[in-house]
Amino acid sequence: MLANGDIGDIIVLSRSDKEFTRSCIEAVKKIRFIPVQLDGKNVDSFQNTSFMATFNSISPMLIRR
Image 1 (tube, one colour):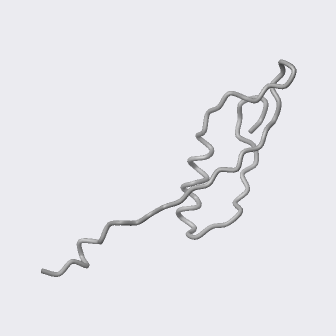
Image 2 (image 1 turned 90 degrees about the horizontal axis):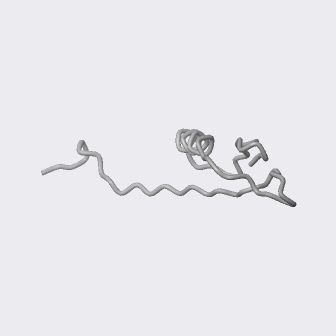
């Protein structure tokens, strides 16, 4: 998180699915924040953000009646 309010480098520490990872990266790029200040000046900072997905639905094609 850069002092100018932009998101800096995004480093993926682990991933489970390529599409999910891509979606998470796109979401992180949209984060808006107020930069951290030190002695009244904006400074770069670091944040570790985790994403978790749960899938609870069943495809209608798999339901047999």
